[in-house]
Length: 563
Picture (spheres, helix red, strand yellow):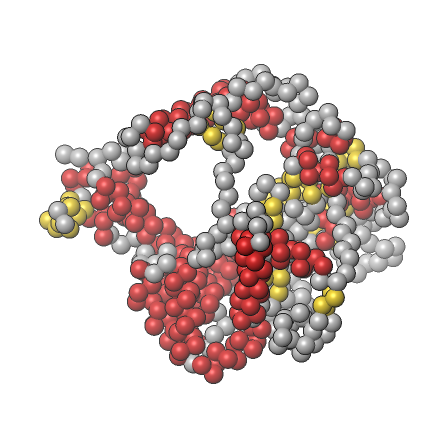
């Protein structure tokens, strides 16, 4: 008798036998059953069973997510999450915020995302208790529960409960986007007056985000503004794009919309005050005028890339790696400055002093070395952060602040680090301790006693001679049939781990080729023209299958923003 037979019931659905775990409530028992199924293998499962296995796994995940939020909310009530300063209220060091910082390091998330766990845990134990129960019972997933919490947080309690009651019964069958639409519609239909007041307040919070880095040298922006203005903006740009297409412009509509919006924004960047959003069209009192753009960007480019002897990537400060061609283009006409890096680790050791209006050389050294805030998980870039004395600096004669060193910390590279304003406040007032064991090597101790390391990192992995990136490149090059570029650092001799990695890649290549063979021989669902073996279409071609870049498509109208 197989493990599946022990879980069989007398019920059937359209000829498919129902097993106990198909409808079991989430919790430790269901998790144990799923583990047994995983150990036994999935080959005995029917298609029906596999669908139910996905659903059962999602129920267990929802139960676990509810438990995580309960624990986060409980942690926020502990004394260790109380800021150790009488100015906690003025500094906005609430228990939620301190708990968010504590959990962010443990989970590798942003403090805001971790703080949201606390907020949702409290909502699911209070006003949105029904949503919390639905999550715990696996009726809805965590994305839907978070959607409800986000849209109803700050709404008057009774209205929030009423809206919840209106949308929750059919939430299990609704997508996240549909559920969000249901909530927004219910808020307006149940209390139009309150909805108008909320819109007036929300309109005061319109904003445009800073660029969010995307792959392949791209970035995204997210605009929050009045819905009418947003639609009017899109319609205006869309009309201009369609007009350009009709006139013979070869670009796609999606490309034209993006290019037109960027062009208009760059050449109409300053606006005069008015009664509405600046430059908001006929209803706004503001007006825009054309103006030039002055950009100040920092790009760290290997010298070998600049002079053309290698094609190593560069780093755009605040964004991340960019391709060599873009880096060389940005360097043209720019001011070059020498940086000295450790050949093994790639960490910045020194900065040149030849620069127009030079800032403090020491400050620049620390910022180039750290590049971002040194709290694990925080990616605020160094030039938008503060310089912090790891061991607090104490002016001569100052005895107001305790310190392990009576003389205080020195203003030197091995006692300075980059901290964002929020993280600086946490270190100073919320019980987060920071040590710098070597220049750029930071250790954090949280209020609960967890320790986390933020080691020194090179601006680019390829700048560190011992980094695995070189072996990975070599593996891909060899599998693709390329000749190793003599200008790149030679990888170390093969070891067991690298052999295993190459075997994995080879297996992926084989699977890709098999999928292509099936799809072109009539055994697959779709037929597509076969590419010649070794053909390259923007990525590395491995054994007839392409790994690497895929063609990007613009998001459909009902897609979430892609960043």
